[in-house]
Picture (cartoon, rainbow, N blue to C red):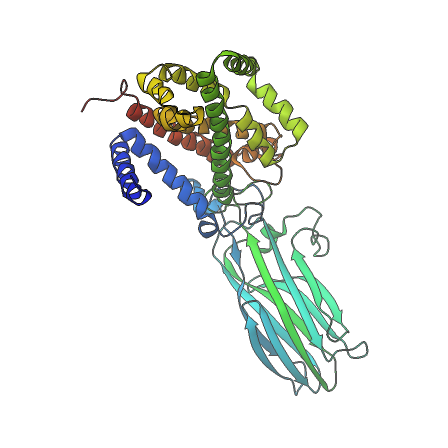
Length: 469
């Protein structure tokens, strides 16, 4: 059969194989779970708006949907100020300005004044929640032109609620150098004493004490007398962090747990498949050599296999991970090189049976070499066994990586499901259920998916287990 004619034949066999596999309810369920995990892992940048280590919440907060369970009055969500605009509040005469929006957070204001005055640049927010935010943070950046040490302008940022008055200043600075960027982070931490409150006071709860209309105001005070200047406000933002967030909440650092779950699925799939591929490959080579060559080769390889089998796997994993380092690559290699022994003995037993079959004797009599017999006659008869063990061994690699990460031996730079469980266990904020349950359920379901597919493959390839229809 030529190579061109083999391609349609292989495709037809693959189609028939998938059709038989999907007839099994176990296989269909397992493949459906695998597709969900693979799609979620591949589409993680689309399904989430943040990276797993990016701060998106005030800290350890529950999912947003808990408001529907425990009552909306107890919970608030993240929200931002919007609607940037500039206006004048004259203290004299002859003040005019021309403003141009340069983006959602930026504005360019040209000023012409004959007797001073003030300019108000503001963002507004209609706060819809009864519960207060846990904290707030923002940014202000100004590049003035036309100011000097003798003719300075003054910048003040404050918060205002129409029915309660002003809170501030959040920032106060004299603008004296043209072309220089004046930048300040506006955070709720550290402002308590400046605003006249006791240290440790939650300013989010004080300032945003309920529903209402709030304004974030940048006030520019101009010097007296004729004055022309330009103020480029490159950034004026304010974000409020509520006491609930997203689909699965956030961790103690304020990172999105849903994002960690999807990105962790990538690493779990990679670790499981690559480590299992290494283990199955080693077991296949050693089992084929031991079973077919026999004699001294078989004795040496099997005694080494027996020695590896009696060593407790978890302590050995811990020792090797400690010695070699806790990088993700090292963990994959360790799991792969410690996962071949059982499969090697299984392959050896099958090869010992196959090498006594008449077609093997006929191949030897016709002058076929060892490599030809192994690749053309032996391996095709155990390929089903390889597929089955590949599917059934992936969960062990996934759980092995999770165990090492949970014990603190995982890669600190990679967010895996095991790392999520370790961080949740070590959190000083308490063991939050929304932090522990998602990675635990993810490990269980992904392992179950491979087990269901593996059992179905075993049933399909093993005539003794095949159901009669």
